[in-house]
Structure formats: C-alpha cells, structure tokens
Length: 295
Image (tube, rainbow, N blue to C red; front, top):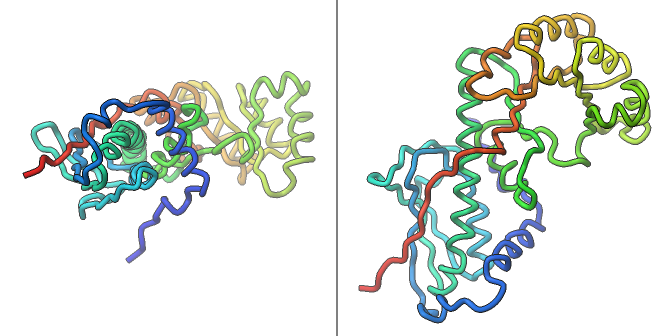
C-alpha cells in the first residue's frame, strides 16, 4: 500500500518564527485574561464543528509548542480527511495540555489558522474531485492570490486538498504577465531575457490573451502558456491548436474560473486549471477549543 505523503515535512524551519510572530501580534502586551485564569496545568479539547476537510495540524502543533503546551491528537485527526461535523455532531480531534493561561493565549491563533487552512483544503478537494470524477487527468491549481503573511498556510491547504500550489512565490517560477510584456516590448523579448537568468532550472510561463500570443510565447521557448480569460469554447479550440503545434507545451486555463464553471473548460488539451478563489474567498471551517473543567 502506498504511504501517504506527510506534507508537514515540507515546512521550513523558519515557520516557527512566523508562528511566534502571529502569537506576538495577538498579545503585544499584558494579558489580563491570563491573570484571571492563572497558570495551573489544565487540558483543553479541540473540536471540529462544521463539515469540511481537516488541515493545518502542524501549525496547531507549532502554536502550542511555542507556548510550552503539549498536543495529543486523536486517531481521527488525519489531514485530508473529510469530516461530517456540525454543531450537534462535534468531532474531537485533539487534547491540549499546559498552563491554562498559555492554552488561552494560543487558542485564537490556533483556531484562526486551522479554520482557514481547512477552508482552503475543502475548496480544493471539491474542485479536484469534480475534475477527476469526469475523467480529466490535468491539475487543479491555486494561484499567488494569497493572504500576505499567511501564504504558507494557504499553500499547505491546497496540497492537503489535493490541488497543485502553482508557483509558491516570485522566485520559484518565472511568470511573464501583461505588465512584463508591455515593459519588455514584446513576448519574445521578455522570454529571451528571462532565459538568461532562469537557465535550465526554472520553467517560464507566459500569460496570453490570444492564440497568436500563445504561439509567439511557445516559439520563443516558454514552457507553459496561460490562456487567460478565454471563453470556454474558444479555449478548447485554441488549446487543441497549440497542442498540435507544440506537443510538449503545458497549457493552463485561468481567469474567473470557479468550481461552478470549471467543467466548461476541462478538455484533453488543457493541462492545468488555476483558480484564484481557492485561496481568495474560501469559507472557513468552524473549530473550537474548550477548557476541560476541573472535577
């Protein structure tokens, strides 16, 4: 049986600094509530309260590790699993133990993170499942439309939901958009100059508004072309034409595509469907962290 990927292993060491900054942002000075509850060792239970895909486990671990608390996950807490939770059917995912003031200092940061990460994963899972159910073999991808300071969580959520992350940042893949083309003078000029720095190790993608632009980009040596804001039927015709001329070219469809409209764009000549909405406007999943009262 194939072992499931542990995407937590992707996270860089400096994510601990990011998590520490989240906590510092939420408590820049005194915590009067912490004075009220004290620092006795107590437990709190993490509950999932609305349906969705569970994602964000390593970030919860890091929040409470920073606050010197311990997290014990239940057997149900497997990332990527859809859980049919509700306010009347809450699902226990973890117990956190530590000084009660520390538990409450980490509560909202942990919940904010896991609810949003799970929201991205859920939206991604819906889109990927929809595509695979009709037999499409391409990739559903997110975009760089992420929340500043929160990108790593949203990109992680894409992976947990089964989607591709697209480029992670400006340094990972070269994407030449309309502004780059206008500034460089032409698609050919832009691709040629990009190749001098990208070398053999980075793909170059060009955003195109017409078949002619896509043909120019492919002829100039682009690895990927994005057919941006095409009508579905025109997209299918142009993608097929491009594939016949450039068989190894990757073709991405993008621009206003949602789960509701995605099926109109899926065809054998399109390799990637990207949706900014997967990391922009996703619904958050409801979680709560409740202190277990002393007996």
